[in-house]
Length: 528
Image (cartoon, rainbow, N blue to C red; front, side, top):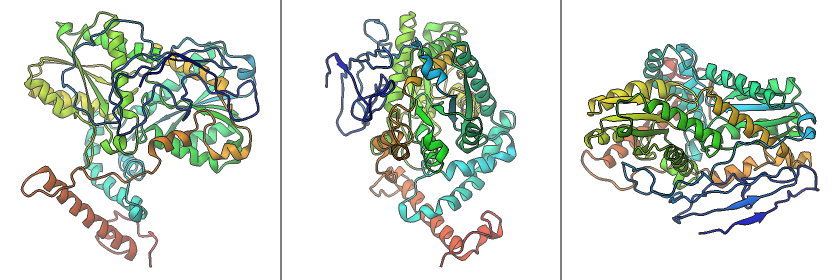
């Protein structure tokens, strides 16, 4: 489907005001950031979108470049990608980080706050088990059938206790805890400093999904500080219903229950993987690490992203895979502009459970690369902006060891962005660019209660990608005898059914070996 260049002026469904317009980058139908693919069974390829958006609040334009992509579909991709074979034109798909002058009315019209959302991580070994409980108790992480959703917390308790010993070993190997909170706090300080230097006085807060400081704690501080203009910025470059989506669902429920928050103007930047500053910062880090190799031109650039279940993408409509692939393409375009033409590939790590996750898997791909004769490999943690267990232990230890065993002789790893100046300045620009649209469509308390963000409407965004919140399907539907993947899957199903039955009996009777061992608390409610 091809769209010719067009001019669009979108008016918000409320009385005209200086800020009653959607920002550039938002799609006319769903108010979602462009370029974004809505999952469907139809393969879309040779997508060319050229859009110029003007508004009453700023003169900004966005033109997206041509990308060949099969969006929302399972497609086989070549393991070894060669450099992009196309003319090296400016990265037109990038959202420029050149910030417009923010009007005095926007900056001076209230107290500005920026809420950074992230996953969180245990800071000590004693934090590991309760952190895992919070993680697995999230229905966006483990989706039980509706009939069994009352078992969400008991199941999370069971899994967290079972997995805690192994997880503690991993955290012990990286110093006894995750550095994620400290790094995120540092990013918040640097972002605040950058905003002040750009004459935008704003306080920056950190809200973690599964550990301190929890999002609820950040919101309480925001209220105490009297913030009345809030920009919500998830620290996930690409949107996924399991990361940004989960954090925004929680935030939405908090907003609905608080009169102060209902009246606070706010907006969300759902994803920012295509911003020029972010792309350049990633390219800078890759370029720095490549020169450490004796023969930089022979190095395979290996992008490793956190995985999500395939069903999230193909059935729930998660745009994560499409955004991740486009992000990698944009980074490689930038590197090619710098005369860096290395082959590259993308794989997904950190899969859990019996369901099928996005492929190719990182561990399997490393082995295949070794078998194909790749001798030098540079790992790039593409979906992470902070060092944590998945970079410091999973990539640096497990995958490095696997690579060396597989015949790869030279190993390198690009550090996470952290407080990279180009990255921080780009985040500051993203915040400033969003300010004219804070609260642009909030015309009444009633309408404010209906959606978390007037800009882009998180309810619309999440409903578009996860409208029915379907249960995740099993990876195999046909029974096969013998030691096969199908047999293992059915064994897993039988085991899970047995666990659910045991948990049901434990919860309903208040008795059993889990209570005796202290895995489940004795004060759980007794069901008749």
